[in-house]
Length: 443
Image 1 (cartoon, rainbow, N blue to C red):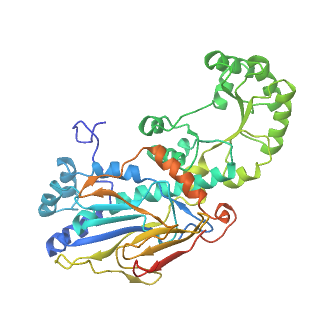
Image 2: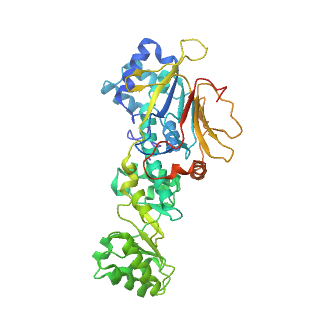
Image 3: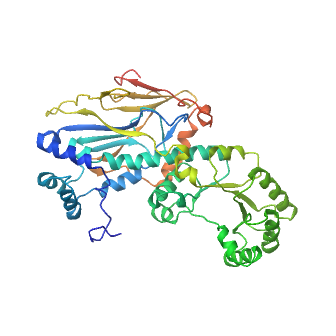
């Protein structure tokens, strides 16, 4: 990859931010507050309406972005020309590198209202300029993963393919595929996600492929000749029943799968299953696509279906395209080395909770989660409690990187410990309450 200013190497992420971060930085450098010790936290005041849990995703992408959060000559020149920085601010940014600590919930874990999913400790100057990039990554990826998790639950044992690349920004499509894979999707159609993150890729064909050939038979024959009988044929361009007959006649009983993208899907799926079985293609799978979401997937539970493809609903968070996360200052120093006093705003409707937070998930004797306990002192976990914050950055060094497979496995375990009602698609309250305690001794 080449940066915008021509130097080889990864592009800087430093301008993936808002102008107001530099307004604050410039004024803080002038007042002397820039070097005050500070703690910022990322949390959601509430879950999307009716949702029962959220899913942490984007942590790995955030750590990658932090590595490249540097201000080179091109970035500094732009900030000066745009009036976002003066010479003193540019001088500070020229050597910028985050040297503090970051703690966070592990990627793939669940979160609830008030969960401190990210804790950033450093100087005010170092931490404040990270706000926008932190929130843009986490708000998007947590929203997608939370929707994807609901879809995986609705699908049961049937695999899901993420196929929303054509319905969102090209780079959001890559992030969406990664987040969906963490939450349990089996594959993605997005090749960049496969290249960058190792997400397994898969794809069929579009109606255009059928239409460009002289007939459906010609199109199927061409695909089978090129890809073999294990391929998936799209059978709803003209007449579904006729297409299925043609497909099995050409491929034989070992045809891999047929895809249905339109019509009354439960009815059509049953008709196709009967026809496939009658023609001896009992092992041929049926994949359904076409504006599916968690609710329509759940409605297909009794249909003879082997998998689903989800696009638009997935990449738009199924009605909740942001996780509504915020990045708030909760503690700041007074110039000494003592404990950081809590700070919190008192805005009407948006009050804060001051003090650096810690969190654990309380579980009963059966291992089922019963509460999210948030404290302002490191708690003493009980026998069934699971501490939630882990180090991601220590003294500026990234220490929390991990394979994507670890986050995917963690998500399965995190969902498994939730109470059964957490998996309902009907509107409800968060699956477990968030309990705030001022200290960590009695939780």
